[in-house]
Length: 148
Image (cartoon, rainbow, N blue to C red; front, top):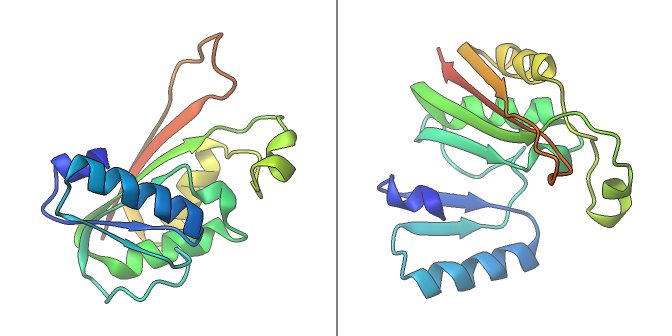
């Protein structure tokens, strides 16, 4: 929802109807008029080719069977020069997330995210692991790339 402050149009994507219902309530409560939601798999979107300027994966790649396919789909829907932004859990050993939260991956290494992005055709890759704080269970990776 925070992205709506900086964009003309925001499209939220999730295949989980409960998540979308919760997001819809928040959108309505905040009075956001530039946000729409679609119930789709991020690996197979109905959005047209080269229709967006930015794709932002926020804590979603670990739910995909094939995260590489998510980046390929991002490349398809981004205009030339468009940006892919990623906020993701770094590799961890908290296996309880697999069953309890439905994660399919225990985070990712920076190099793996770079490989995914580069294979999908992104350049100018950047990533940073945020400092770990004792009160947090997970470390976060921020990553970005530009569509060529």
